[in-house]
Length: 415
Image (cartoon, rainbow, N blue to C red; front, side, top):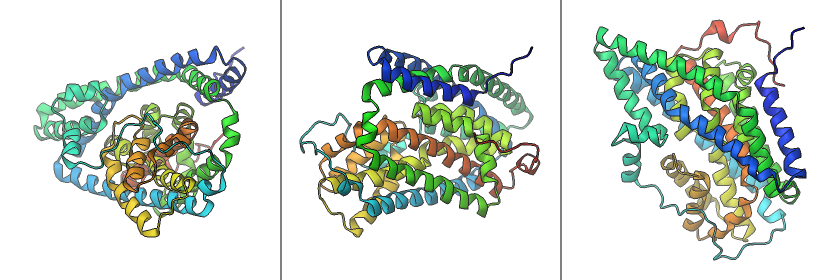
């Protein structure tokens, strides 16, 4: 008798469910299970740099020249900027309509309370340039800094293509490396359910389920915004470019769930690359757009920045005029690009905004207790946003495979 193998997505759901049970009933033991999540995240970080570099070098080498790379880059940044503005505006719209800071009865922290969040020094062009252009590619890879890896891979890939036949050996080598890294990814993903189990158990044990009740209005409002962005904004974008939105969701459902359960879009990156290529996106587009998206197109995080800043202002009874909110939007549009690779980057940027508008930075303490829950939604939305961005650029470049994108044999299974 043959037993059907349980799919990864079902295993992850089981991990989440068991994590909630263990975290709720064994509060003393559950926090130690976070080691399972740490192991999984370290395994993921172990494969990101070689995977991104090898895939991007092969993709850029196939593009062939800086002119083509520049054309794709301009289209990509144009899309990223447009999506970021929409996400920021949606966050502002929802927080002004539902006013969670005014509606909820919250005990405000003292204005001089320590948040434990690093200070944001605003956007610094010099620091930004120094961050994206690596002094050492080895150091950038050791720190898993995606943007410097992308910059070096662009030069390396174009140079490889420019030397003709001599470069074909290098392309073939990195093509083999990328295939090996995808195989390693599959091995690592087999540990994902345990990583999810450990992460959820530790969070539930530490914060309890009661935190959901106290902040239910805020959490519900924010998640409504995420759902509107995914199922309205991104859906309409896909319709405009004639991309099958729900079929795309079907292909990336595992990365979405992985990002949600671990509160890390980074954890889903290797699987997202694989899923998008199966969907029909061009290898060279996936390898170029997706790594950039992890620094420039974090839609869920962008929406959270405007939402959280105004929420804290409302909680302290500070009115932000329309002009103030427009200025905030423009500042965030720039400063958020300089935060790639910074731990808890969203909170760091929000701290800078609060300080800029003379709102107590201690207000961040209102969010720290539920930040993990909000981050789960942000991370999942970031994955969907980057997947749609990659599909759009592939379609825009005429490199979305119609044979795979229109295959009727692939049933849509979102459950």
